[in-house]
Amino acid sequence: MALENKLGITDPADLAREEERISKKKAIELFNSGILDKLEAGKFSSLKAIHKYLFEDIYDFSGTLRTVNISKGNFRFAPVMYLQAALNNIDEMPQSTFDQIVEKYVEMNIAHPFREGNGRSTRIWLDLIFKKELKKVVDWSRVDKEDYLLAMERSPIKDTEIKYILKNALTDDINSREVYMKGIDHSYYYEGYVLFKTEKL
Image 1 (cartoon, rainbow, N blue to C red):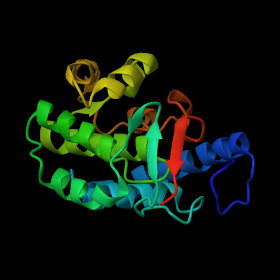
Image 2 (cartoon, rainbow, N blue to C red):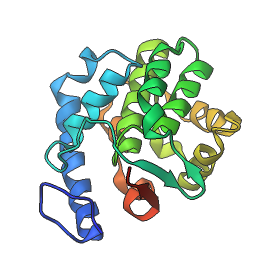
Image 3 (tube, rainbow, N blue to C red):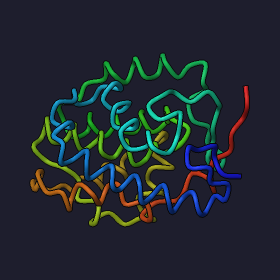
Image 4 (tube, rainbow, N blue to C red):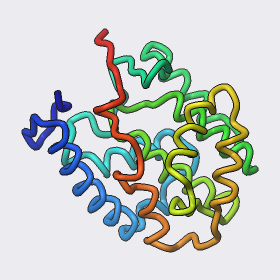
């Protein structure tokens, strides 16, 4: 079943294609608008604004916290009842070094605050922090998909791999729209509607 959406699409594959098209268009608009430069790097409020902008034409829940528990494989993301507390803690995490930034990114991935679109929104959010603190961003074209997915899967237990992968993909080309768009490339990552399980509360 496809997630309930504003487009009236009921087939998951059709929804994924249309979601990709619209979110990429919105991502370009977001980059060109200068809105990203006004957001506070590392805060959940900024991630919320990014998510809302990317998905507001597709989902009613854009920019709002999920109300279901979700899991991928055997891993359960933060339970809904603890989600706000987790986000408050993430807001307070330090972010002045590379290691601190990646640790914050890993925690936000564990929180997985939205029903859909977490990966794309959070990669933009991550690059905002890198840009502000280190004058770097990730060139996602230099990140192998399978290596990234396995490293992120293991990151709640051990974050060495994801740190290694991201460190080797950093670039100082921080104002390139092409580099920025690699992080929102929908086809680069597994799709949520295939892998996520939800649990109604």
